[in-house]
Length: 329
Image (cartoon, rainbow, N blue to C red; front, side):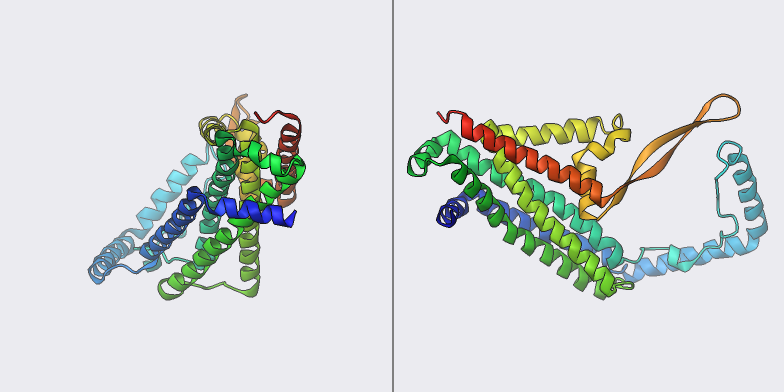
């Protein structure tokens, strides 16, 4: 089995798409770090001077009209509370503050987890494409039939292909996550704020990075399994695009109450070790109508782990059954 897996790894690494995908991932990583730098770097001196002057004018206006501004705010708040009892316009905190003007300070603890989440989606999709194209190309050229003449035990061939796909994308995922984490830290440490970066914060971030690597490997395995079932790279990619465009995109508003059954929110919950999703909650009011508002509902790490784990096992098992029973030619 080890020699078979090594052979599959060599074949996968020799494919042009694997190299192009790796270079593309590194290029995207560089672009993300450039974007972080643009966001974190301070404003030019002339822009800071303009911002300071605007702040001083606003603060002077507030000093001159604070009573009227507070009265108007309280009146608007009272009017709004007729339909929304929880409305709070923060009328006791209207004084302009310098820290609220200009460019907000970039914080490592806020920025890094969200960028890593985005990289997880990117790496997952890339790994799926690499895995699907790996097996899809073999069916298109007929080389899978030739390969089975050398190793007729299909289950061994199937497992070796899944293992090769996961082992090839794992180093790329580790490299991308490491570059992003280290790069963001260096940029924000110089131009932003690293306040709150404790040992616990690093532990959480390490867990996030590890789960992204595992997600990338699982995506490569699922891509290989789906490609084996549909026997064509374009068909496998079409399934993913159709799902993302229709289910996660077009009908996401209709399926707002069922988001816990969608792949995207479960991936976000798994990477972030739990998350919330918005849901519409309606309740009757005194006049007989209904009042609806958005509330945040919890999607736990345990629930998302079960969802993704069962989906992964189902796809892999179904592909194994198809490969074992279906004629190759």
